[in-house]
Image (cartoon, rainbow, N blue to C red):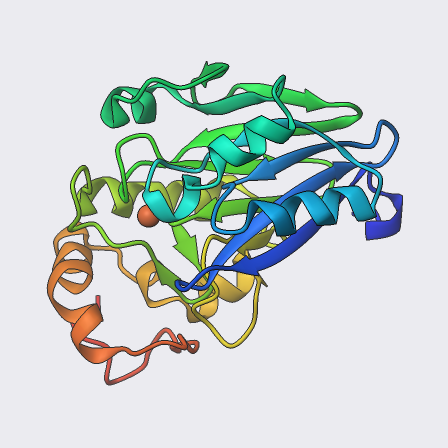
Length: 244
Ligand SMILES: [Fe+2]
């Protein structure tokens, strides 16, 4: 795969707010266009980053509609009034909020940010219309609250569905190359990103073959037995509940 320096894009990460959110700025090198993924918490910091690198914010991408991922939309749109706000249609239906410049997508859609292609994946489970954004040129995956480093998003909030999450995580694991680098929506681990191969080895949510065992672990066990920062859990770890 190409070296990072040869890719058409760069990904800038900002950790912002009281919930360890990651806000990402995808920079298309050739055009100096920028897409902000999950605009929240400190719009001034996001705008300062864009200005520092000479970028024009043309798009806002939402992994999902939770407050901690979207609470900077208005201020960013004040600074970049022509920016399109991209999200999946099932999330817009779930959210039921009037958006300025909404661009509604379905899983599999592609957005071209200059020379940078961004693929929208529909990854329900945390919310009905949660999305991950895949950059095929470098196999980077921005995962929102679907997949964390050695964790995954809660499924007990409104619109959450652990059975959907089980299938979503399986699809991610089997549908993308092992070297895919994941960039999560929160900094809940000891490191900010990892590869799918590392997740396959150390993320307990990827260790279940049985859906019901996964659902039980997600809904009743995980938050009781694990504290952040999340650390890798070996596949055959004897302390893991419900081995399968
Ligand atoms: Fe969330």
